[in-house]
Amino acid sequence: MKITKATLHAVRFPLNEPFIVSYATYPDMPALIVILETDTGLIGYGEAVPDEHVTGEYFSSAFEILKELFLPAVIGMSPFDIEAIHSKMQNMMAGNSAAKAAVDIACYDLMGKAVGQPVYNLIGGQATTHLDYPRVLSIEAPDVMAAKAKSAVEMGYASLKLKVGKGQAQEDVDRILAVREAVGRDMPIRVDVNQGWKTPGIAVAAIKQLEGANIAWIEQPIRMGDIRGLAEVRSKTAVPIMADESIQSMEDLLEIIRLQAADVINIKLMKCAGIFHATQMAKTAEAAGMLCQIGSMVESSVGSAAGYHVAMSRINIESTELTGPLLFSEEIGDLDYQHPYVLLSGKPGLGVEVDQAQLEKLTVQQWSSQL
Image 1 (tube, rainbow, N blue to C red):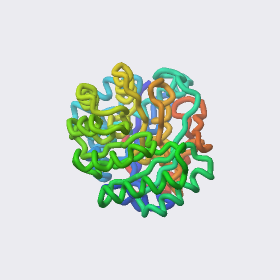
Image 2: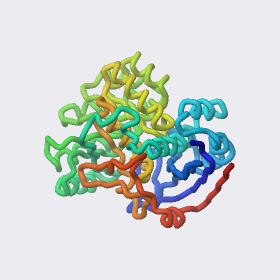
Image 3: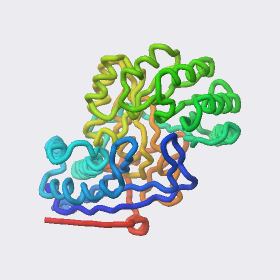
Image 4: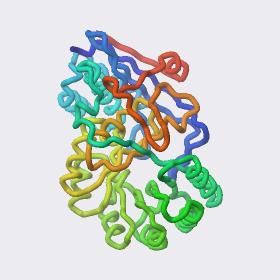
């Protein structure tokens, strides 16, 4: 089986409401959908969500890199040769992990369809039976976040994720404590600072005020890359620390393990270049006694399903946060969310049916090439 054609769609997914994190506000979500076709008639789908603040990629530049480099390079190759595909892309250009992830995900979709198996059966099987997800709350005033959190509990969500990190750290402490008061002590609350507290000193002072609030973990409280600083925060506080933006590669993971800088790591396919590397990172973390989460860059059903397949296949992946499709007012796939769980279809490949007409509707730029 060989890849004979590649098609690339640049799309913008409309959001139900703006998505607000510490470093940006998104009125819609730009993404790249890759379609790979083979000489056997199979079609595989992949997705890239570039983020200039995290992966160092921009929407338009990732489109050009896929168009000019990565997609022409894999035409003629077998999707089963996934290590060779990654090696070829890496030798062509370093970084650009989201663009590489789109190719990787499409290849796994093709592999699963070729052998008639869901992707999770190719990478470890069914290690868990339940895949749940939190209600994610954007940064807003404390009373607004508290009201939305209470509503989420009434809707049946089993956990909450609070985005903070914009403005003063004390404002974030007020937001978090307001939510805790609104939902009671037992509702699991995850806090994602997205680097917003910047320095270990600010982070430690904020976290110490939260030590009695039963917080599941504090995610990426300081700037990315400062793994030594993350270790300092962890050593001086009692709330578990999760690394997110600071872990993008296996090298980052090894340094986090060496410095004992985190209790949990957030693996995102867009950061590590797809399913192939995500499974390796999870296994390495398991050897170091660390738990993992599969997180999201707000992908559609295509990228979200890929992340859920990885989560299904690894025993030490204990949480997921792939909620992009729930945030969109228009989507292209049919990933089945029945909160607080997501249900993988069990169909071959990613198990997602893509609405081609909807994809065309949301496309702002398109390219294709074939043998």
